[in-house]
Length: 254
Image (cartoon, rainbow, N blue to C red):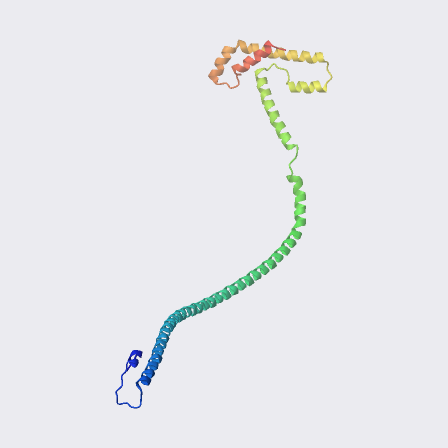
């Protein structure tokens, strides 16, 4: 049964009690009511504090639960990260081993190539030393035979020029049978002999006169010669342009 301070103050007792004065009983009840009231106030204060504390505890518990969850997640992620690191470490070790093997193979291959190069160099030097005297002799004998003569080009060009001059000389001889020996022979004879300049002039004049007579004879028989040349298809008949040039020479003997 609960009592309040007001209940205690207004509590009435039966008159069967003896030996207690009413004032003393009332005073006692008032003191008891005050103590009870203060006790109830304290209880209420403590209950309020308890509620606040419980609320804080609940909040802290919630925070702890959240932290526990985050810690659990962190532990899981840490475990996964450790596994990944272990896997990468294994991969790095495998790659390192492959690189070491590759480097070793390359070193072995390079060493073998160097050995082969040295062997090939020695063989080449031996072959070169063996073939050098023979090649020197061959070059010495073939150099003189295969080296082109410096006078070959000049001799070929002079031969071509002589053949062209000879052809033109034969054509002129066929046109003018009374002509004296060629100009080249005349120059050779005049260079070898010491004849006077007057004799050379008379020889050239006589040659000029002989050519002129031949041309006049050809002009007299021009029509007959032209028709005969056209019928027979004679290729030796001189063209009209050449005849005009020849007559120009006769017109202007200077």
